[in-house]
View 1: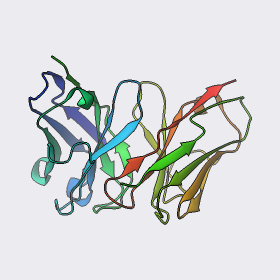
View 2: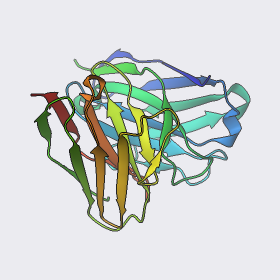
View 3: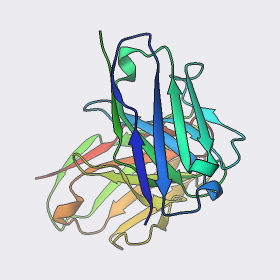
Amino acid sequence: EVQLVESGGGLVQPGTSLRLSCAASGFTFDEYAMHWVRQAPGKGLEWVSGIPWNSDSIGYADSVKGRFTISRDNAKSSVYLQMNSLRAEDTALYYCAKASNGYSRASSVSWGQGTLVIVSS
Amino acid sequence: AIRMTQSPSSFSASTGDRVTITCRASQGITTYLAWYQQRPGKAPKLLISSASTLQSGVPSRFSGSGSGTDFTLTISSLQSEDFATYYCQQYYNYPYTFGQGTKLEIK
């Protein structure tokens, strides 16, 4: 069974940094791309970033480009989201998702339960 | 970025009704289109990928169609568990983008 467990969320001040982690199990991690998707309170889904199995061809939402960095450690079956220069509008539940294949052009097949990030002074 | 526009934004229907949700992309995405269902307080669930491929375990009352810029999600006979919010997403080009969602409510 696929399991995705996000961690690292919390309450932070504007302008600071946070690193989210997602620990994966139940599938061959290094064969699949991974995505981060977020959802602000009471709002819709926003795709944040995606990384293929080999970390080539990484993508970001325009709203986070230059501030967020996605990475993965295939040996640890984990994907990360380094979030810098956080803003109030980054407040959201952040989901980690397993893609349908190892490359780009992949839907999000399995989702974690999310980790909450609150950016507030 | 490709903009995805869903309609309607919300909709009231009754159990047993046939419902269609539409999704339009601001440029052609061939069939790189997914539909997700999200129940309150839960993570999204992938229903359909590649515009029309039903995921394993998803009831056959759900179907998807379309290509290029215009897509539809149809629920042939609404069940109580189908009252949720539905999102389309293009994964043709980065950044992958979602529609704003369609909230399906009980009439």
